[in-house]
Length: 593
Image (cartoon, rainbow, N blue to C red; front, side, top):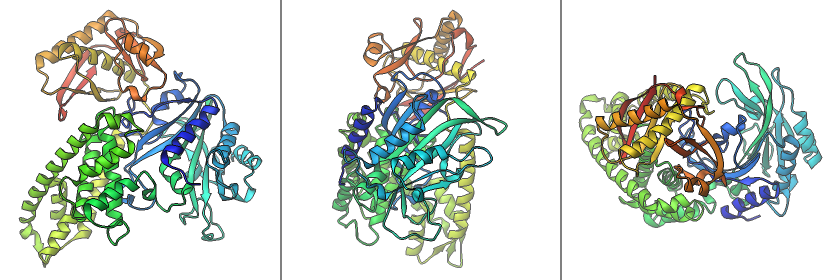
């Protein structure tokens, strides 16, 4: 069948509405209460507290389309399937239905002519094969057989293929069952299966059954609340349904790539143009969503801002390879905005900011390139036998942000070569250190709900209100990162906060702590929360009802994170640092003693 992205989203909503699910909005790309990950990488991230047992305001059955970013496979972007930004169709059961209902509904949505209409002869599934930890998932296999999937197209695969979690060393986890579209390609071998990379089996949906908790000593115990967590990639599903070979051939990318063709004067299917155009389209699309996000990501040298900067500059580099003029990325971004402005309100609302930030970042990169060119001319001392050392090339990359590809091009122009092997070795060592640091800093994927974190989260609300009182009511949260040790809070403000102002903020927070007032949680609609004066942080992510936490006269906010019971439990609040985070955004770090 032929189907557009808009139609697929609507079919998803219609189907799960018919199964009594509440349709909730996409959450921010920046996890609000999870310091362990940089971006929302799956639909389950914003729902972790509810998967762990907290009550969701919208009920036990939920569905949505979640904005996601994954950059671990950035070098694969440009092939037929990898994207850094993507939309994930998901549905959840929070202790309600389980395997039987979900498998039956999955089969219905995939095969019913009212929905996707995929012939059952083109479907295959996989289930967990079992091991010494947990039994073979014969239950899921049995439900697939009853649906009509023949035994020879039900594959039993190990944990590496059919198991979810835990994200850290402990926590909820369980077997999953995956659904595949079977192409007409021949089997790669007698053992051809969805575990192959031959391309015969294309994954389109994954149903996760969270039924175990992995303990610190490595045991798997049955969970009291068994959940269902599913994910269907919008882009990849469009490829299957429309008979395309690549996500870049779907209606989500065609207008963007057409704009690149127009600006470059080159054809998408011409030699050496296809991959650069795909990378530019992907990276600018992701940049538009990061810049347009409710939580205000802007280019910087740390955390999410660093990833954003890297994507924009990588897109600019490939744009230069296509001889695109300065300012082209802004025009490409406008094409992205036009594709999504009617789907995600924040993209339309923040379109001017998106264009302004991209313009500034392109200008900054031009300066970086000029500085890099000057440094390149100093490399003469590092040339031996016509070869520039890999160490010198890496310094250009690491210190000046100068792309290795450009160093290589400049070397060729001067009749030189670079020691690419030594550069790749230095780069690999740098990457290993970065990944180790990231794993230490962002060490899992499940929200931290410890008592220490709950206290700091509560203190963050008090500080937010105090900042509004001391500075201006226009102060707005732009991001936060809370661990057991400290809180980090980013907020909109256009100058350094004076020391006297910081001490006043501390004073107001500590007065609220000394008052020892109750932290009260009430469920209400967003409109009701507004009427009560609640700060509606990132409202677009909330469903019909929200949780509102109030602390007498000291704070009232919409929030889904962990909290203390009384302010008196917090201890003494101390601001340890105030600094710039990015243009127009300040950052405060604080602790409780």
